[in-house]
Length: 196
Image (tube, rainbow, N blue to C red; front, side, top):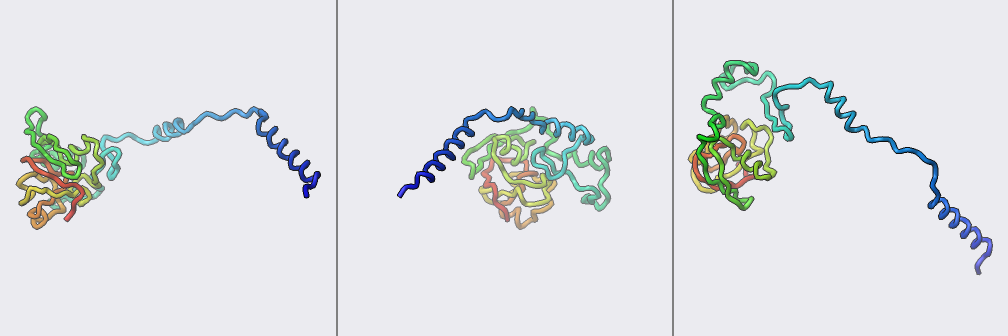
């Protein structure tokens, strides 16, 4: 049967919980969010640089590691060194926009064809469209950004690889490309996320 004492205690506890729930409580002010102030204070202690940090996708990194050896075997020179000036001569990115030829590039997996200037890499053109294409070094030193040119033949019939250090002649003959250093020289169809 029902014990009147148990029912009374149950009702009393329920009433206490309801009263506590609806009571105002102590006025404790909620502190302001200081996370932005902390970030700004920490950022003020970091010296500014003119170059992107390597391997940082958010700012498009890809700088060469300190002490890296250049293709000629000599130590890489500083930012203002003569070696850097010599490499710029055949860089397709140095072609002014108003002089750059435009090519039709079909991104097969993305399902669309876009116009890409000869001074823009296939990776940059895809990112300009808002696609999250894979990459890591942006220097042609890995195959994270690899793609396959579906038109057949050697990929260098369709793109100019600037600083390709990973793909050999067999991979190029099979149509593979590194989108981070591939500048179009012809209309082509590209399958992204395809590596040899």
